[in-house]
Length: 449
Image (cartoon, rainbow, N blue to C red; front, side, top):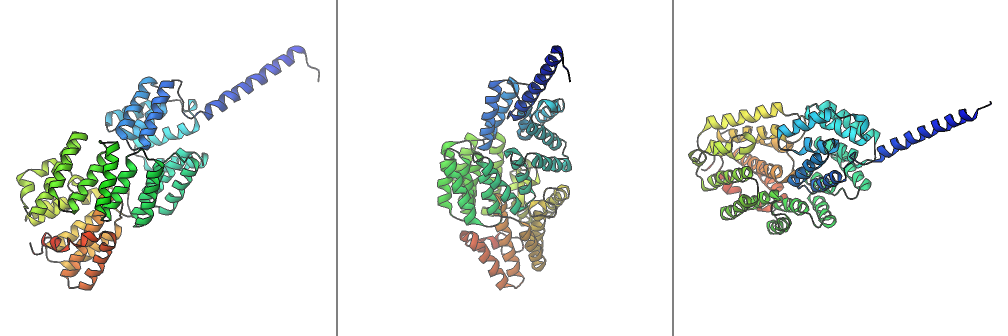
């Protein structure tokens, strides 16, 4: 075919334009994050590093700075939708994301924006579908792996979650928070030696971070190795005096050892380093604990603790127990109903372990003990125990507490052998809890108190 010089020139120019467009598309899709502002990108990366360390206030501050420097920085807005403790800010960030042109973003960012908007709208089905599409489209992307691994963790699909977190570490060995998740996955299932190995590895690969010490300390508290736990928690606090979760774990040790004087010293440190609301809550919880140990059943109402512990998840099972010991059956009944309503609304653990459903069974079991129905109490408490996990200090402590109450129920119903078996299970986790068994009997409704 005969071509004129002009025709060849046009063809070459057209080919050059196509190649240039492909190069631009390829470069934009290879970009990790879409922003033209180097200072904004630097702030964003600092925020990601802080989030990886679980220094959430620092992370929020850096992501806000990234948005200030580049208002069109979609990835920074995604982080604030997920992390901000200000509902207005979360809504504003989500609204801005709805205006973003998806074609201006990388594939990863498009998925992250979709996920953030689905979460903001509380559309669980859309979150699940988007997460699976993300993983299918970018199977080795660390963010995709983190999203699906976290979803498997929340669904308590233990084996899948563990495989995904291990794949995440292969894809990005610097994603050290995955090691924390692996430790908690093992801990939840009662594989305490495996959990300790994961947490110690986490310490080794992240020697300058507070959270590995906190996680290991939490495990050591639950399993009764209190002195080792203190050392770990204090090591983390030496790095970050405002790492407030560690103070909570120190309070756990003081509670387990009935050391109210130590609890006061920890409270002073919380007030010095933690947000005011958190300090107020911690002090209210300490006063409730003191009432329980002092057998001063009326103290929570004399000191209006129900005002500062205003929600069921703030009060927990101890408030219900003290109400029964004080003869305030209507308060205990209202507490049970509040938890039933929370359980009815809860979708996170429907048909699975943990959650409000397990706590409702625990409270109903304690009430049956108080009303002299130990056989029914044993059934309720055994069902609660089966649904509970050794998931962190809070849930792990509640599981041990439920087992102790189950032993009491079995003992009171005449099944001493069954009670001893349950106590041996407690002893296998934390032998120091069993020493508290007789005192717990005296502080249990329907018992010797």
